[in-house]
Length: 120
Ligand SMILES: [Cu+2]
Image (cartoon, rainbow, N blue to C red; front, top):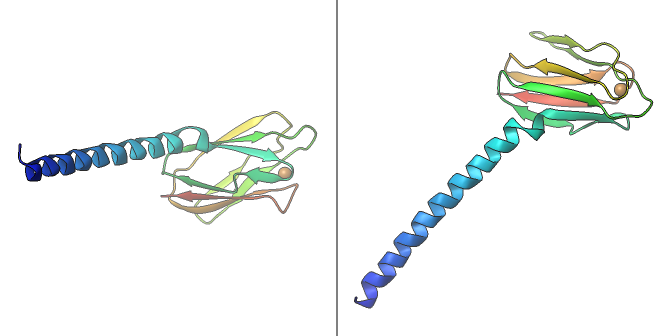
């Protein structure tokens, strides 16, 4: 085989591998979005993480990871309202985001706690 066509074959092989690689990265990103990323910890008077990127219809779990602090998550928005009530240590509450937009979850007990949900 002449050297020129051999290098062309190498190029084609590299191109194919690059495509496979980016597809795998996309799958990983989707898996991240649809699993652990939706659990938010309430700990040390803050939400962890402080920002969450979601799709419409996704469910978020808020878990009180503090040992002695009660939290009270709520959202006040024009098109969407949510109030979890008082949430004791070790408990979880869930909400489903049916509306697109940015929503801030606050805490009725700790005013500095803020979690922004970005729903597309
Ligand atoms: Cu709180």
